[in-house]
Length: 276
Image (cartoon, rainbow, N blue to C red; front, side, top):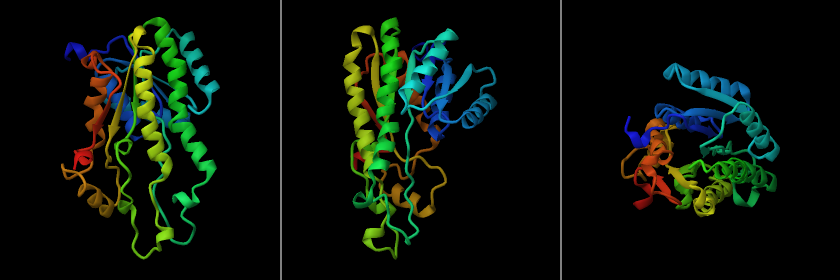
């Protein structure tokens, strides 16, 4: 292990840790020696994620706690439990999000479309993806600052933080325009907002040594339809979607002293899509 990537003795908390990339973020940090705290909504999913990680890293230090990032009291409760166990967070990865899947059966009003998008869906998705990141940074970042932990806050944004969704990717033949599914407005707002939050945090606790950056992944292959994969791949200079483990090295870099002079940046890893 290169010394600047060494995270031995560090404890990292990951939100949305039971999801596709949440598990990968945990694996990345475990590879560098970090202790990891997995958090998500349901213990069952967290238990499965832990078992999956232990198959690859049998000696890893992994614990999990059920946590709802949209509920400040839930976050405080987890922090209090960790404090009681003598575990203090040095690295926070804000990964939790509601990623609405684009789908339409052609027989109902397409609620992903802006004209039909409900305030309830807006509030729910913002509360998890953006407010949740603010709240976890508030609770755990404040503690890092008090301890002068030289901590790291990493917000997981998206390539859609730097450009608009190409709604042609979701176009379905034989559907009227008003029934076509789209990537909803909340996704762009949340991911762009996370970059703004990153920049704010990057200067807020800098005297206490707390750095903040964002990672913006591109599309990750996860069994999507062949048609969708081909459409998206045609927009990417590398000619393909990302594999889920291709962000591990970026996580290791951004969460360690290897990036000690990087602060307030949005690292876009999208196979070149944003520059074409």
